[in-house]
Image (cartoon, rainbow, N blue to C red; front, side, top):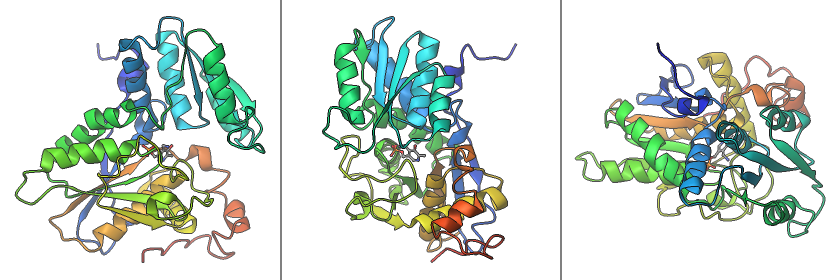
Length: 334
Ligand code: PMP
């Protein structure tokens, strides 16, 4: 019989898929690592299982314990499904600006969702950080993963994402491109790929981060942008500044146009940070040769964005698309 013992065993070992259409005119091979094929639908399943394994080993999470994290998105789903399989309770604190659909997904996995007001200062006791800190103090046996500072986030990528890419490309990868949110993916995967290729005749793997224009990683002030899951307005501990060789800024309009092209032309229904990372990957790839192999991470799927990026009305209302652009949106390489 062929089966796994639990859904947790399905995390990781995601495939590389060659991009064939958006790469027109590019000589290098561009391979996308499709992270929506993880059971929780995103790359964050990887950090969830590693963070929970480590907390158990360190005695920070005991049988019957409760996981408390301020998260509204992919990390919550990953933590919820691993926690459920191990018998932990999950309490997620989300700001009220987070849509009902996202809250309902967390609840569907059996997590408890506490909603906090968005219109309060970050240091207010009512803010989502304030409430999650209080719950962590008050709930007996509570453990707060804190994905922005937990070293097991980047470590999970050093141990899984990096080796998978190295093995699947048989050591031929020349450039690694990924979006930067907490910084865990670029720090862990990028560090592994550099370590393993350090003595290679053709030189080490080059690591390139993709960042929403306005975010601090690419020199912005942290001003708002629409692409979700990436960019920062403060420097998280999970981000290792010594790994990236370059960080490229990508606008929301470019990210969303490419996200739509990935669905229409490559059959990859993915999220906005995927489009952003692919724009950066193509900018890198267009200066490369047929000997080069670029790997780009696609962190999540597109179903959570149907009412936004994939809605013509939403795109037009924010100026990301002009009327009449519907069929052709996106000759965006520059
Ligand atoms: N894209 C999406 C959709 C994400 O949820 C995340 C995680 N915040 C990222 C990209 C970036 O990953 P990391 O936090 O490892 O930098």
